[in-house]
Structures are given as structure tokens and as C-alpha cells.
Length: 173
Image (cartoon, rainbow, N blue to C red; front, top):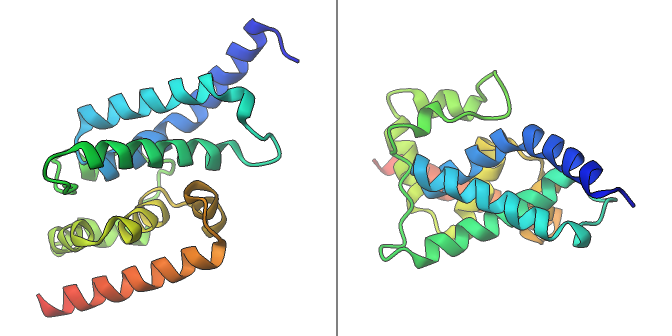
């Protein structure tokens, strides 16, 4: 077992390597930079406190993303309106884990970006969360499954239904 200072050094390294991705996820789910910063910090505090329950055979990123998604969902439930805003002025400049924008980010930044964000915002939570994890955090199906505590096949079904819903919404407008 690692000593206290070794554990702190190891966790600090994990924090540095995963914070940007965590912050991006929190920002996309919560819609406000200040709330995302607070949520990302709280996620790492919770992860540090629960480190003894972490199964080292599973990827750390999936474990901490699951903590983050659960925490953000709890925060969203506490909001009186229950609606996530993807129109935050800082949302398009969110720091993500990659320097190359994904195809989805390119579409979201185009002139139809506002329509796409509104359509995503209108999705039920069970569809919105996998979409955000897949396209904004660029998580794999396996990572999303581990994060949400569902099977890989269920992730595929949720994403398929979300895409169908988005397609209908976007073609109607």
C-alpha cells in the first residue's frame, strides 16, 4: 500500500490528467462555467475520499466519469427548472481532452449549432447524458457503459434513439 505522500502524488497525477475532460463533461451537463468548476472539484474530492473503493482493474477515467455524471445529475435534479442550458457563452470554448474538434463539435459550431444544442437540451436525461459523453467527452461505448452502470448494448440503443430523436427534431425545424 502506498504511503500518504505517495498516494497524494499519484492522485495529483490522476487529477491533472483527467481534470480537463471532467470539467468539459460538467460544463456540457450543467451549462455554466462556475457550476462546472465547482462540480469538477467536488467530483475529485469525492473520488479521493472513495479511493479505497476504486477497482484498479477498471479504467480510472470511467470510474471518475461515473462519479461526475451522478453528481451532475443530482445537481440538475435540484434545479427548479430541471433544464440544462447548452447555450452558455463559454460552452463552445470548453476545454476538452483533445486539441482536434470532433465532427460533432464542428457541426455544433456551425450556423445550425444553436439548433443542435437546443435539440440536445430537449432530450430526456437518459438520452442526453450518453450523447454528451459520446460526442462532447468523446467517451467510448465501454466507458459510457461503465460510467452509467449499464451494458455496452444499452449504450448503443440509447444513442440510436437519441440520434433518431435529434434527426426528427432537426428536420422539423
